[in-house]
Image (tube, rainbow, N blue to C red; front, side, top):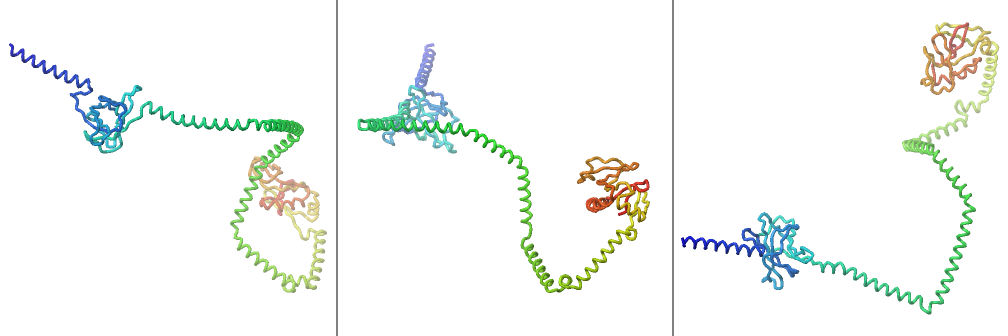
Length: 417
């Protein structure tokens, strides 16, 4: 029984020692049950960093400071040993171990600023160390520019005060009084000029109003003429394009050849050669022309007296029947007697045509005559045939099928002209 009691006491004692050892290390911030990866860093100064200080990555604690001592390899420098308790964390090369303040009281810790290196430190390697300034250093860094600016401001104010003292000294008081008097006089003159300018503007406001109205009218006119101006510019562009496409060298050469031929013709005519030269310089040809002219006059007179010998006018109705007029009827027709009005018809249709029909294009005045179920559209009519004949000749250039219609013996007929 005593032996078992001794065994139990021994076991309890060992357990107690283990618990005490673990507790003491735990209070120091060291967990003996956790595997750690030790690393080192060298600093010129640590700014109050102590053992058990936190080691963080982006603000997350991953380890603790284990030991701080003076470096054996670099005199005057401080070697800090810290550990990382997370097995999965690997520290890239060129990572910086930066000492920083964890709170406003100045408690220090180490922040690992990882780099983008693809290779990693091994446990026990030494990292590059740096220290972040404390609040006092930061305040001093912020206040130093203000201090320098304040000193510069004081120097500037001192210079300004010396200048003011020099200006307002006893020696310059008379000059200042005279200067103020001149300034007052200048202000009075400026006020008089302003009053005169105000009166002048008030008197000329009507003229300015008329001028602005005229300018507005001019602007409206220019705006209204914009389309015409654009058309003119477009025509000029087309003209310039056409002119650019013309072969000027060939045209000039052609004109030169024409001028040469014209010169040669002039020389030939002046020398009396050729038909034209003989016409100008030959008396016999002139005499023959006189005789021909006299014969032509007699022929025209005979046609006027006896038109039935030379002219025959026939009429045709819708059935293509031909009507002949004797000499007396023709004479009355030419004089506008015996027959109703003559119509220049340009189209016929079995039904009425709308006013927008393409056949009416470029015909300002038009009418129609209905004969049975057929509509005959005409552009001109007269009781005399002579004006109809003159207009028909011009009208057929655009409407070749146009003809003169009239009523003959009670039938609607077309003159075969």
